[in-house]
Image (cartoon, rainbow, N blue to C red; front, top):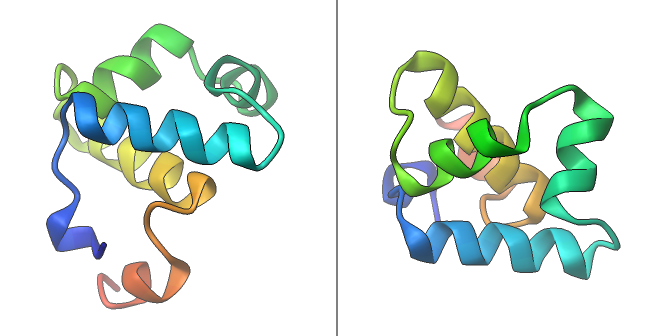
Amino acid sequence: MNSNDLKAGPELYQKVRGGLVARGTTLSAWCREYGYNPTNARSALVGGWNGPKGKALRQRLAEEAGVLSQSDTASLA
């Protein structure tokens, strides 16, 4: 999946949660570690928070969970 395919919604939320669990953490634990509110993270993933900060958080979560690879994000720069 590349960044152009990164569509907010329940499917992305589940993929990110699963990716984080596979890496030995949870969405809530990741949020605590990096100073994000878990409710905001969920909103960003399902599409309730679509401003620039929400999109940035969605992209970062996708990268951290392995849903979006680092090489995919390089094309954004």
